[in-house]
Length: 230
Image (cartoon, rainbow, N blue to C red; front, side):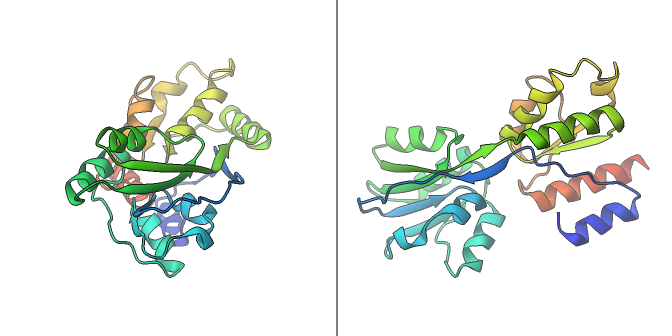
């Protein structure tokens, strides 16, 4: 969390507790020997774990989300196309309307990536070349920290930046018989965007969701919610 955001919460006397629900781990991958027209970066983690010595110099770069764009720019790479909607369904709709002719797309992604992009592009005749370059893991020590937190603290809000973060959180709460009876009715859930919210809402309602799907706007939306309750 940026220091400015942390200070904004502190001014509201809001204590922020951070526990990683997913840590990213590099997955070794073989060199892609085939050529491609586009490379899709669908998260800032994909940028961090990608070996840019494998980047085709002529390939156009697509990046989803402001943070992914900033990470690429910090490394000195320009982004040729950024969808307005920062999730896979929006990416597919906008990019398919943007390109002409059959394209070959290289998509380095996480082990847990949804199949929306692959299925949509291949169904329209485009080639999608994939490499799993990292995975998410919920470390045992982080699970223990979360259990202790839930047993010893009364939480008002919990923020989720991905469906996998919710899966990790739910995995722990499902096994905790000691949770107070009013735990879920008291807790308000914030989700970064519609994909994450949809997964959560299979079990519990989402109270906070920004219109722009990134962490800065999620923090801002939560601050507005807290101010509204004062």
